[in-house]
Amino acid sequence: MPRRPPADEKLLQRVVRLGQLTDLYGALLTDKQREFMRLHYEEDLSFGEIAAEHRVSRQAIHDAVKHAEKSLEEYEAKLGLLARVKPEREAGSGGPAGEAVEILEGLLKRLRSAGVIYNSEWIAGEVRRVIELLRGDAAGGETEESPARLPQEQTA
Image (cartoon, rainbow, N blue to C red; front, side, top):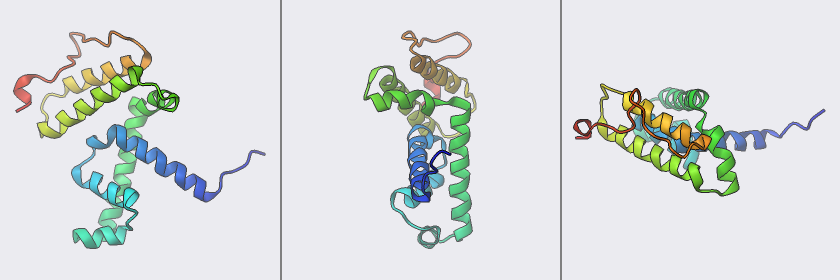
């Protein structure tokens, strides 16, 4: 029978995974979700402490954090970026993973600054580029059906 990790080890693995998912997809969460996740996991504050600081109920903080965790897991289930980037991170290689991270950071920065997004086709194009890079396709280029750049008129 395989050895079961102790509860502390499971908790540590969960926190590390959530940190990695937050690094990749955190900008897709709401500002409050990101803040509550940061306070709970990085600052090690309880839901009650966060609730008191933000003058909301403990249940509201709990729900926001759990919803954020679920969203991060759903993003990973659909996009699988952590599964693709993780081996290269562990190997210490910059390569395509480093470029992919730069593209994702730029994408997420533009998402934050764009506000309400009416045309999200450019998001799909950027995600496709990242996937191609992570698979080792050096071209990672654009296609007509999936533009890789945000149109200038939407950046303002």
